[in-house]
Length: 334
Image 1 (tube, one colour):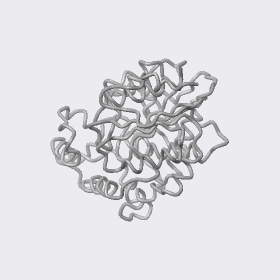
Image 2 (tube, helix red, strand yellow):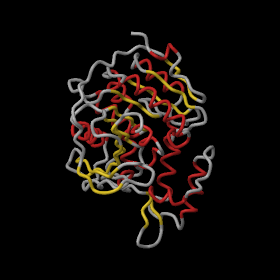
Image 3 (cartoon, rainbow, N blue to C red):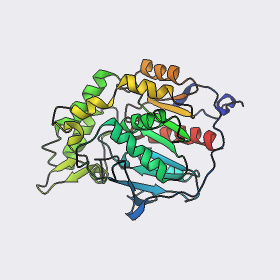
């Protein structure tokens, strides 16, 4: 089969496929989607509803869902320290192109349940991905950013005898991640982890300082979705501090254990499904060398390089990100 990229269909201003290879997506039979328990309305602009999934340990995972129930499922899994609201308009864009789209809060993040035992290991996150995929009744496409990406990579690559997913999109993540970028994002997450912020303006200032190439947030109300308003009136990140402290309370104990290059390389070698890597061109976590290493581990994978985007690709250039992901998934589904 001739890949559609060779006919020029996968080109758009601002992003480019850096690798054009062939794949055979196969025919995956679609059954009716079984979602979690509906619990209320989704956030503004999502066009969907809020449901709950059960994770590996029976832990509650909150998710927005949009799209027709009979459409093939796609699951969005955010990065560490983010929430399901970090995808911008992606949920609605996928629903509008014929997908039943789910944006899930990872364990300990957003409105999902905190792990009672403080288990925020890669095994736990990957186990939750497996639980969500199994609950849908048909293999979904998985779109994972950073932590959501490595959890999806482990869930798929370490279970070669299971049809966990029909396609995988890794967003600015690979087995090889740059240590300097990891340290910088870890310091950003830890800086106000315990004392929080006095105001949403302070949050906006902190985000601008960390991510200077992105315009300062103007919708401060939108920031509130990623924060908890404490009884003391201060604003705190909407994730469990044990995600960083871990069971033993050590500095960055849990996050440091998540990126195991040897384990992730082995998982990547197990990938046989259609795979896309979306890299932010100015990312300080995933270098060009790290991206090329993934393409060597997964020879059938494709890569999209998004101009003007850093590690938070979906947030930095949501329009270009949506175009790239929708185009790739259309080749899988079509």
